[in-house]
Image 1: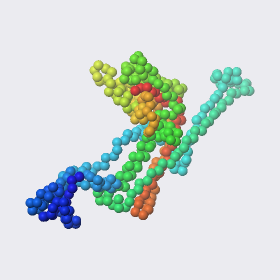
Image 2: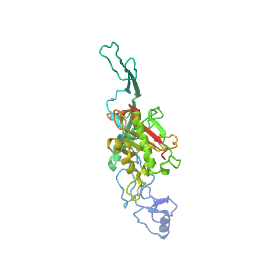
Image 3: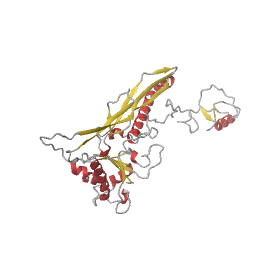
Length: 377
């Protein structure tokens, strides 16, 4: 950075003898040397170096900056870009409370024989029978932890006053950051769980069938190497497998795909006219449309990308994936207790506001209603 001294007549530039409390403008030292040799005085009203806007004097905590006179600072706060989609893809289990430490549900199976002479037949009975077949029930309880989540917003009173004077209140900014962190954690737990706690989510539960898609005529499973009919076959195979596993009771109505293959089918055309994409083709020709006459809901999810599916810090998977399921609280849901704010706590000049809530584990009540396919990209 260029050295500066203040206006002083008749001094040599290197003497450094000038009034320390002088508040007049700064000048480049070479200019002052020339002015001193010529017996002139300088009356500039601006800085001579390039550090006229932002420099090391920036106070990140309070958001205070050095602003040039001709600079227009945009006062809008620009948060980090984050994709959060969990609320779109799953229903909440709302009966859980802050005092609960576990969430649980039951899975029931029943068995019934036909007649004493035909165990697999219909339960016929005669008018004079003395032996009637009975029904048996097996009930399993599934228990998952409902863990506490907590963060606090903290700042000093002088820091708050400085931020308020600047028009950028730090308490509001830190609360925005806390809410963003909470939503990011929700997103991860819903889709892939937390490997540190050994929990899974919507996309990686071992109870949900996951297989590699069949290769196409080219010998590859990748969609970029398949024709539209082969990609449609991958979709219908996934939907049919879940439909069959549920005893043909439920056809999945939602499909979530990794972003890259989703982008491919959304833009690749199937007609010479160029007015129909592979995505349009699949939406109109799938099993759900034929069976129930409703459109298949197809969207992208970042957690199905091979770089993300094993979670933050995990190794990348070999392939991108897709999942078919039905968004229904009876089939799959996530227990969560919303955030609660405590009263502000004062410690010296510090103000601390704790926020806490509870987050559970995605509950697959009927995992047979879903299916996962990998190898698409």
